[in-house]
Image (cartoon, rainbow, N blue to C red; front, side):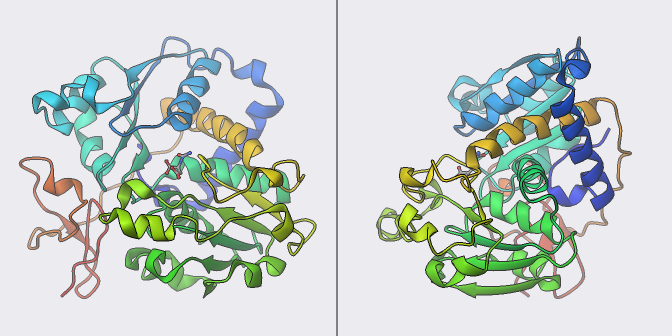
Length: 352
Ligand code: NCD
């Protein structure tokens, strides 16, 4: 059965099929209220989360299934020194599907083959967050009627913001999408996205949100990810780089929507909430429906499994946040051609 580790595991036709299924669920929720009866979702959250975990649990309960899990690695056997692969292998014996979040990049890629049941990546460090993207795409479809041809501003922490990374990887599949990247230089988009998805897209980059606003169909605000900074002073300096206010919204087009994966800290002032263009709480609701569609599709084996890419084992990953540096006994693995080799787990490029 297919797992969802990275949004690129799905082709455009599969993503569109999932989003159509989510819209079917929104229109006729009663038809799906027993669809996962007798099935168990395990939510393994090694990193704090409220909305994503509750969104998964709410999605499973609304499909008639059950849930179990933990929301803090301190309450799992990780504290006894158990490996990630042993944990998921054990939990795979108690459940039909696993949603996991982990602070290390590449954790879900490593865990999935050990689980024995499909694994859904609910966020791996600063790497990716594909189920947030499903909710984001559903929001675009419902708010803007389409994704093709939109001009999308991505603002804030583009370096550590995993929601942005997965969203860009998905937007690349649509035609005519233009990206405007708005961030301080220190929080600019990482190399693996620039060399990957971005290379085939139309995009521009600025540090000035005011300058970008008038040309956008959607503005995606993000929180500066304090927990991923090595230097707390650097975080203090950058945390309030952008604050969207009702005053700034006057510069934005009348039909531009504002999205945010939440939680919001300071980056959207509460005076924007009453603006009809503020779509972030509708986005939360869509996230649940997108997860319902995903759980259902994966449990039904709707999409066939895909073959793993060919791997090489002749390097060592240099990304200190990669799961390979935490888990014992991992065989370092790399994909891609010479010159653009990247870690199979965290996707960090190998500098050659
Ligand atoms: C995001 C995440 O965890 O990456 N939140 C979420 O899943 N809703 C964004 C964030 O934490 O800033």
